[in-house]
Image 1 (cartoon, one colour):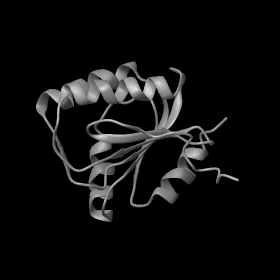
Image 2 (cartoon, helix red, strand yellow):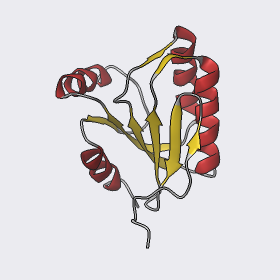
Image 3 (cartoon, one colour):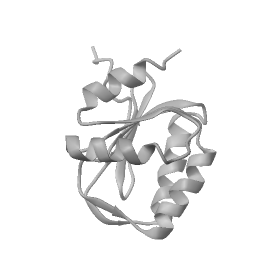
Image 4 (spheres, one colour):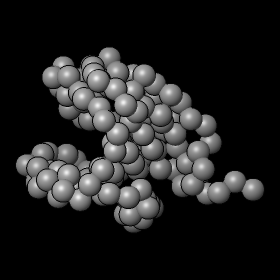
Length: 133
């Protein structure tokens, strides 16, 4: 018997591994890379839309590894964010300092969904599941 958090299948892009588990949480786990560009972001979002059947989803973004996004990649991420159907997004970062910093910065961002920063995937998952209908 599979554990309820096990992915049904993992899709690997150049910059991340993506899967949806049996609780319908889409996980995006970034891998070490020096340059995430606009094409990587577009590809990643197409994978998420495909996995979720283009339905609103809970997203867990694991960004604890070392990766950098280009200026064009960042612009594309903001553009794609408007197209995505996100119920809530939990971002896992590598330290409490980063979590606090990003939470502060988040106050100035404009998203149409709740977003929170965490240092463990367990806390992030618990928070996401509070939004499950």
